[in-house]
Amino acid sequence: MTRYLVALTTYNELENLPALVDEIFRHAPQADVLVVDDNSPDGTGDWVRERAASEPRLKLLARPGKQGQGSAVVAGLRYAVEHGYDYVVTMDADFSHHPRYIPHMLQGVSEGPQAYDVMIGSRYVFQGRVEGWPWRRRLMSRAVNIYSRLLLRMSTRDCSGGFRCYRVARLAELDFSQLISTGYSFHEEFLWRVVRHGCRVGETPIIFVDRVRGSSKINMREARTALRVIFKLGLQERFGKR
Ligand SMILES: Nc1nc2c(ncn2[C@@H]2O[C@H](COP(=O)(O)OP(=O)(O)OP(=O)(O)O)[C@@H](O)[C@H]2O)c(=O)[nH]1
Ligand SMILES: [Mg+2]
Image 1 (tube, helix red, strand yellow):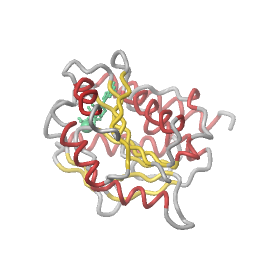
Image 2 (image 1 turned 90 degrees about the vertical axis):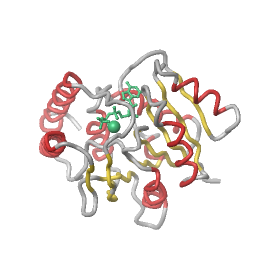
Image 3 (image 1 turned 45 degrees about the vertical axis):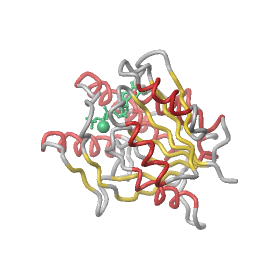
Image 4 (image 1 turned 60 degrees about the vertical axis):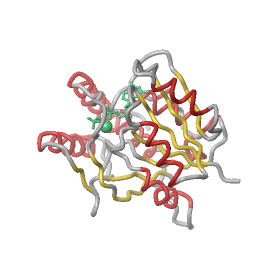
């Protein structure tokens, strides 16, 4: 039997998570849902624990404190490898990544001889877009994508989004300990590593909607760190050993 995992990263997402988990099960009833929570002060982890008591498809990976979104995604990917899943979807838990796209993303990595190893829910391909962001945020995201594509020599349109679906057998071939990102540059770095490893990457359009509930966890310090890490990887891309 094919096994699917949807891995969510949460830090204070109690306002979003209950409805999101229901919606994921509505669109992907065959999947398990893993919540990687960093001891959210708002009790997100406690809610998962309670709900998981009556919902065997729901799992909690509780970490002691906030360790960054990137490291939480890695924990979800490792969980998929270690627990024998075939496909894993990673997504934010603030409804910016809508579960209605999951079936199509899974199709992209599982069906036909042309199946991809990685399928990206992409804001920046035809028919994809962002809704609800002020122009400065849009510009920043576009600029970060151009920056990463140039430095890391990647052709993917959306390198910074975290809505992705992976074929777990390919993930199992990778050495996660090589990753240097713990924060937001994880998405660019991991994509760069899977492409270098020879994975086939596809993109399918999504409409990304700014969060309606809860607050953003991104800040200028983390954003600056992300740019620095991508620059460092860019040097490795140009001058480093393969
Ligand atoms: N486990 C864990 N999850 C995190 C951490 N930081 C952010 N997250 C979660 O990762 C997802 C993305 O974070 P957001 O705050 O939405 O960041 P963003 O999407 O880049 O920014 P916005 O568009 O402003 O919402 C959300 O589900 C967060 O709750 C962290 O340190 N640990
Ligand atoms: Mg968000």
